Length: 102
Image 1 (cartoon, rainbow, N blue to C red):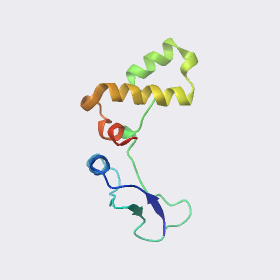
Image 2 (cartoon, one colour):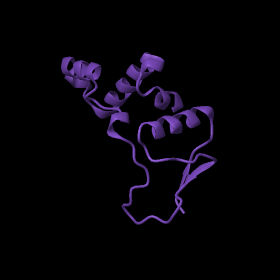
Image 3 (cartoon, rainbow, N blue to C red):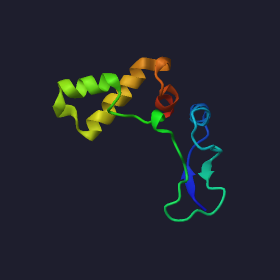
Image 4 (spheres, rainbow, N blue to C red):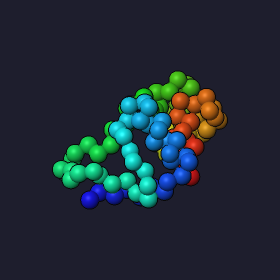
C-alpha cells in the first residue's frame, strides 16, 4: 500500500477539485491518500498537467529573471513564483494551490 499523508481541510478539498477540473488524476482525500491498487516501481501515481505547474517561463517571472539573473537560483525562483501568485489572489491561475500551502 502506498500512502501520502494529507489532512482533509477545505483548502485541500478545493485543491483536489481544482486539480481534477484541470485534467489531473482523480484524488480521494481523507486522512491519507492511498493507491487503489498495487503499483510497479516507476509507475505514474499522480498526473498533473503542465499548465498547473509553477514555471520560470511565467511572463512576469521571466522578466524579473532577465533583469536580475542572480536570482535565477531554484530556491529564489520558487519563492518569487509563490509570492507572485499569492499577490494575484483569486485571479491567479494557481490560487487553489497557493491557498493550500502552509
